[in-house]
Image (cartoon, rainbow, N blue to C red; front, side):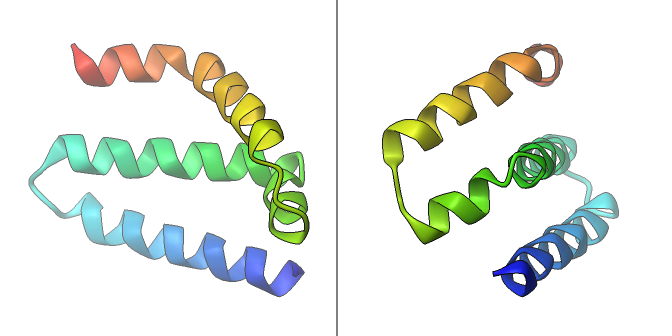
Length: 79
């Protein structure tokens, strides 16, 4: 499962590199936000736990916590 987590991280980094040179800033910003969420999930090992035993309520709780943590980024992106 650790290799799968590394694979996801590499894929996200490739998407970031691709979209850095893209003209659409909003799309790049959303990719960055997804990356931050992925980093936070990886820090808490929630992604691995979720893949082993899917618990949607637990996953949504952590996702909401992350979104409130990075709320300033969402406001910045929307306005």
